[in-house]
Image 1 (cartoon, helix red, strand yellow):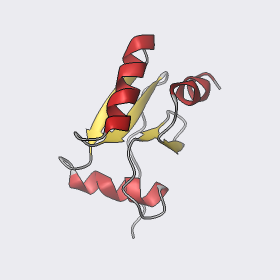
Image 2 (cartoon, rainbow, N blue to C red):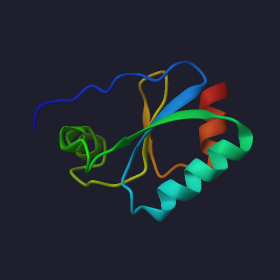
Image 3 (cartoon, rainbow, N blue to C red):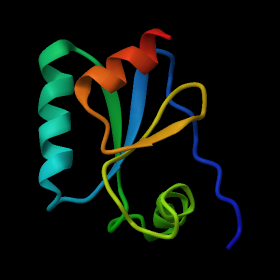
Image 4 (cartoon, rainbow, N blue to C red):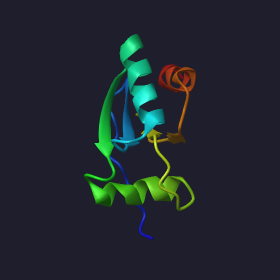
Length: 89
C-alpha cells in the first residue's frame, strides 16, 4: 500500500474522515459544534481514494471517525475531550 498524506487542517481545527451512516461520526460532529471547534468532513465513500489514508492509520481497517490534527497526527474515534486536549497541546 502506498503511503497517503492527508491535507493538514488549519490550526485549531480538525479533519474528520467519515461516512454518512456512521453514528459515532454524527455524535462527534454534534459535540464539536456545541463547543465551536471547526472541522472539515471527508466522506470516504464519496471520495474513495481517501479511504486509503484511513486504512493506513487503522491497520488496514476503514474505521471512522478517523481524525487528523494540525500537527499531522491522527486518532480513531476520539472523544471530544481527546480532541480538545490535542488541539491545545
